[in-house]
Image 1 (cartoon, rainbow, N blue to C red):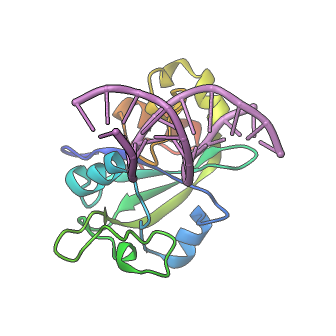
Image 2: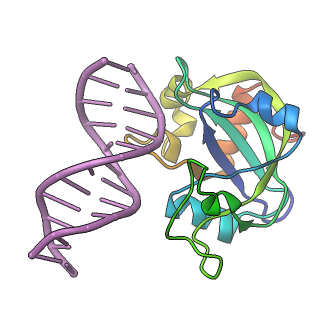
Image 3: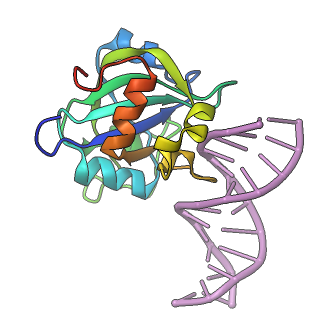
Length: 161
DNA sequence: GCCAACGTTGGC
DNA sequence: GCCAACGTTGGC
């Protein structure tokens, strides 16, 4: 990681959108995020090229399964205006959008998915937001040391990735 | 399916 | 501005 590239983690239920779906699509709008903190990270802090850990939640074994990258600057999430969309927000207006998103592109699946339980028991992962009790944030920053450790556990060389 | 934790809403 | 009620997240 050259310069001030910052690592992130996004959660998704694979039945809704999986890492395989992202690989198939080649690129996707990370739409439907309806949490202000998560929105702010995307809108204010994400930069094109930042690495993104892709996490599967709501599964028998929740795990980090892939590596992606931020592929666009933030822009208005169009689903907030779509009355037939589950993420429709009647309080959002064209003049005052509420929700923003970035595009994501897949880089590669982790050769070895890294289960949440492994992270919880790993001393080097101490303090990571993801493993904090009651954490519900679906877009979060990841400390560089934690990011590198997860790549390592996932079977990727942190230097090469 | 259960339930704890959390964020948001809305009445006051 | 407080806070109870509610809906959602997400691990188990």
